[in-house]
Length: 322
Image (cartoon, rainbow, N blue to C red; front, side, top):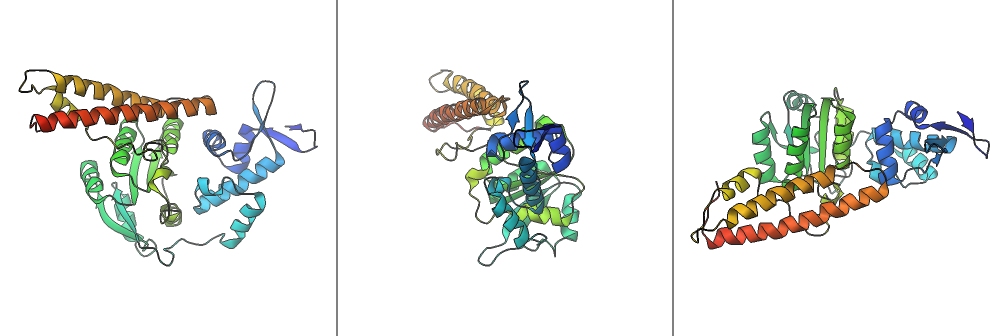
């Protein structure tokens, strides 16, 4: 620890993480995305924080733990943060007047049983279904289009995060909550970039309640960032062909004995892969993040155009995809 020119102590990111309880990776993401504080930099380009920065971050962490969305509190002044703390420091959330129960679907092994035990405390949730099979959960989500998804993922993996990304694209929920037990920081950060709220197991009913209800009633689907931000804002559609459908299209020969379906399917496979890659690509700074958002958006636009072409071909040739 050193002393700044205004005689206030400053400390590094590791110390700030220990003081505030904010993981280092989360702190970096919050700073980059929401500009909570602007730490100074040492000649070695390491972050250093003033005592005011630490106080502000501590307040924000407490409010987030109470259930406030980071996006809702990140730009508030310290006076506003303190006022918010005083208004309802320990209030359990519920459905405010004029708001309907939150349409919710749940996936997991043990979580459905806990939700049944906690049903009185979670009465503001309209549980439209609980599923232990992910395939059944996927089908239900795409048909019912609920506002809130709650998933239990004991071990986070690239595969289940990609499956969740695809599901969000197709169903556009207002909020997604993942309860996990083990997971690498890189995967947790990826979920954060997707706009998914993560809670480490075991969770309490209070934690779950706060994180389920915050902003769901008035949150637009465009606030689920990274997986579909900018896409939904610009009107770009979610993917209309999954991998199985594209594989089916690639094996079809048209009446004209051409291979257009195969070539279109191949192009869409490649565009889908690059779309996912640009969304998950590592960012060194804000310029990198802006570049990858642009690449993600433009790739999605190109993909949507080719999906239109494939749909037109399917209609003209009376093709049925498996």
